[in-house]
Length: 115
Length: 112
Image 1 (cartoon, chains in turn brown, cyan):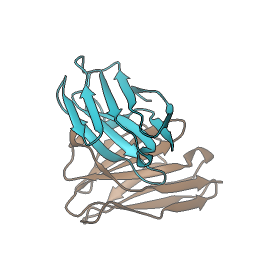
Image 2 (image 1 turned 60 degrees about the horizontal axis):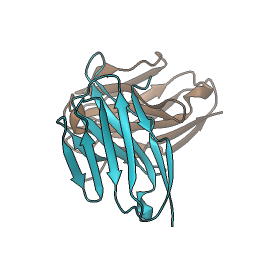
Image 3 (image 1 turned 30 degrees about the vertical axis):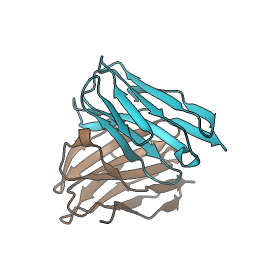
Image 4 (image 1 turned 90 degrees about the vertical axis):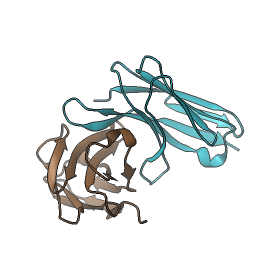
């Protein structure tokens, strides 16, 4: 069974630009969560999507947004990029929403560098 | 911000040594999870703990759910080179946004 696929693996963007990252969950998984990982703040929850609806949202500014499609694939968008947005963005999938106690399956991440 | 305090932040050991790391919280958790992250990859779930006092093994890894439900420990016995990586504890936060909160990680380096 294929794992969680994130594309692209690496991105370099200029401050002020916007970026879209993609995540394809494991087949049959309907929940996709996004996390930002930085050396200073560690892993921070961005948001979760389930059945095309945002279920939960972390404490990030409105520049960070996401969506989920009917095939459960998810995208996250960051507008007006700032240097501090440089991070590894991880998505994780699970069969249903709320299965936090059973853990997620993470993708390999997208490394975003803002210059 | 982070709600789980993980220690030590880094460890440098010889191959074959045993490793211990722990995670504490000011809040009670009903589940403790331990993940490992290899360079350039996402975290992979190693062990999940669901009951206070529970001791669970996965090969050379053993983890315990503290009795107070505010801490957890991970031990690795007879370390090998492929154990190198960053180990994270995590727990589900169900008040407010339902999400996993993670410790800052323990970076393990092994000298052959």
